[in-house]
Image 1 (spheres, rainbow, N blue to C red):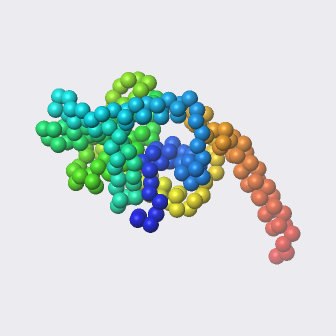
Image 2 (cartoon, one colour):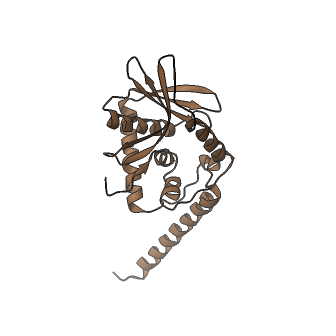
Image 3 (cartoon, rainbow, N blue to C red):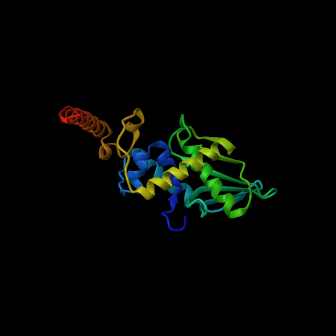
Length: 213
C-alpha cells in the first residue's frame, strides 16, 4: 500500500461510527468542533503530554507513534504499557465518554495492536479502553473475531480513500451526537436523495410508456 494514502488510526473509528463522517473528515477535510470533541481533544492532549514512568514493574509510554506498513496504517497511541518482567505490551486508548454499544472503539484499539505486532514481532493478546465519563478501565481481548472485523474496516477505509467519494447521508439517532451534524445535514440530505430517487422512477416509467415496443 506504499502508493496509497496512509490510514490514520482515528479514521477506523470514524468509519465504524459512520462511513460518511469518515469521508467528510478524511476525503473532504471537513471538521467542526463541539463541546464533545473539544473535551476529547483536551483529554488526549493531557494524556499524550505525560512523561514516561515506571510503577510496580510496568513501564508507561505516552503518545507513542506506531505504524503497520503492510496494512497502510499510521497513528499515535495514547498509552503503551510494558510489563518489564514478561515484556508483554498492552495498548491503552483513552475516550472522553462512556463504553459504546458497538465495536467502534475496540476496532481502533485492535488496529493499534496490529501496528505493535508488525513493529515488534510480538502477539498482542489484550488491550484496554479507559473512559473519562465513567473513570473506569475496560480490558479488551483481541480475539480472532475482532481482528477480522478490524481488517474488514481497514480494507473499507482504504477503498473509501481511493475512491475519493462521500457516501450519501442516512439519518440515525447517533447523528445527533456528531460534531459534523450541521455540515452533513443528514435529515435534509436523506430527504433530497429520496426525492431524486422517486423523481427518477417516474421519469423512467414515463420513458417506458412512450417507447414503442
